[in-house]
Amino acid sequence: MAVLSVDLATLRWSDLGIVVLDRAHSDPSPNPMEPGAGVTLKPRLAAKSVPDPVSGPITCEIICWNDPGPVIADGLAGRLNHLCGVRGIRVLMLDGPQAWKSRFNGLEHARVSEKQLNTTVKTGLPGSIKPRTRQPYAEFCLEVYKALGRRGWQRLETREQPGSAQERVLLESNPRAAWKSLGIKPLPAKRKTHISDLAEAFGSLRALLPFTVNRPPNHNQLQAIVGGLPGLALEERNIDAARIVGAPPRREEGLWREGFIVLPVLPVKPLGMRWLN
Image (cartoon, rainbow, N blue to C red; front, side, top):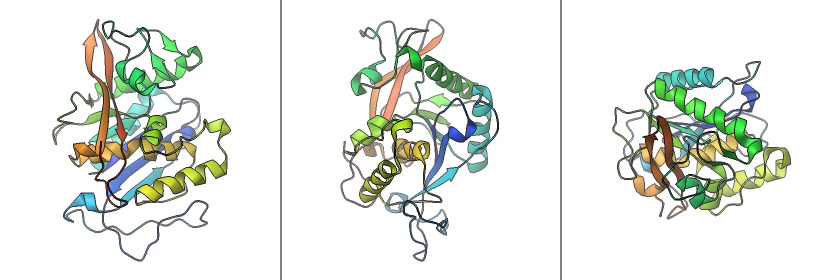
């Protein structure tokens, strides 16, 4: 039932936020890690056959890649695909745009999902990104989706049926919108984020949802955690636990257009992942 959530970056491998989200019953002896703790705690997990998986806590395993050199889209796609294969992961979440705007969506310069969420980055017709300063990043994200598609991953195509048990599904996240969807102040841009901002966001998220981490998350890793929450719900076939925004992906003039963004929503109660739209 695990999900891989990635906060993408282009300059350094160490800038990537890579988190495996899973759900399992933990032994009562370990305690969840608090921000700034000096030791690494990882709960001992019971067998995967525990019934009613949506009732257990969420475990977030933060993975760090510190390779030298810039991140290459095809190389990153290969490593993510391999990691998912080794872990048996069928849902992969990425935080960047997956496609261009459709020529026929009625919007001047945005996909339907981007308009509905007022995202910071907006993808227009092929080759057009706003703001222009984000064009290299957006085009890198598009290349990662394309490279994963060559490896058999499929974009989420419908709100009602997130994918069969045999499919490997790509989901687009948006951490900024995810924080807002949960009623939590979004993290500032990485260069403007202080340790106090991380601690506040971490604590607010923990107050809503029980989860553990194997190390204190940095900015990108915490973004990957909040962005990955709805993917876990969809993997558990709990479609009421996620909000799916936008228009279905489709091929148009030989290129992918539109595509959904998935968001978490507020839980009914402090424990579990039973959320309301």
